[in-house]
Length: 219
Image 1: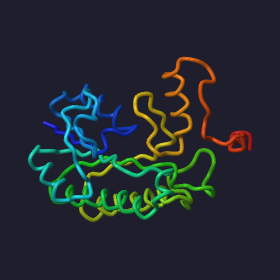
Image 2 (image 1 turned 45 degrees about the vertical axis):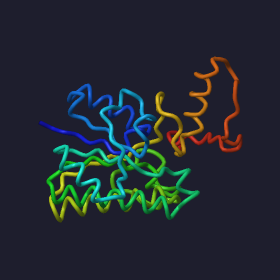
Image 3 (image 1 turned 90 degrees about the horizontal axis):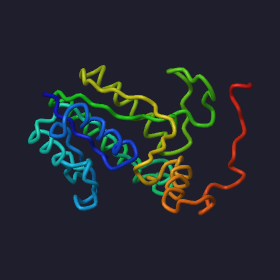
Image 4 (image 1 turned 30 degrees about the vertical axis):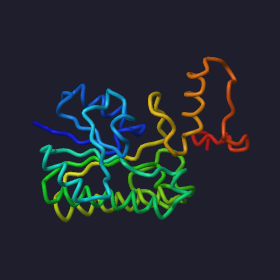
């Protein structure tokens, strides 16, 4: 039986993914984990355990105890928050991933870890981006994602770890609040509108001049 651990389950990807995995594999076969206390976690994410992915011993103890076979590692400091604390973002994004990969190596786990279009940066292709393209990220989040892709490939090629990843675009969650990413302005607008139930009920923190009218398909 596949037993799944979702690390970072309270984030924008995690809240939706955990529910989908529970629907597919059964509630008891999916364990949600994050740094929040149990009382702060919605009922649909339970069973739940408070976990610090930076503590490798704590992580491996949980994996062995729960007989975990697959890890969805989603815990990260996103782009906007990462620019406020670049070194802390690097530590969390890199060491958390390395802890998961190293345990996967020793205990034959399958791993999913999301990458991001943040790997491309301003010099990357604007449309129909190929798998192998220039990656010159301008944020610590993007830098950590490039490095993470390389580490994931290293653990696959050197140790045979079954690790998968895709580069997500900007994500918008209807259930999770803004989490410190570049699409937070859109998420904030939608949540504000749902909360107040009327038009023009709040102000966006996105500057007017940020609006980008560039259409890559017309180039």
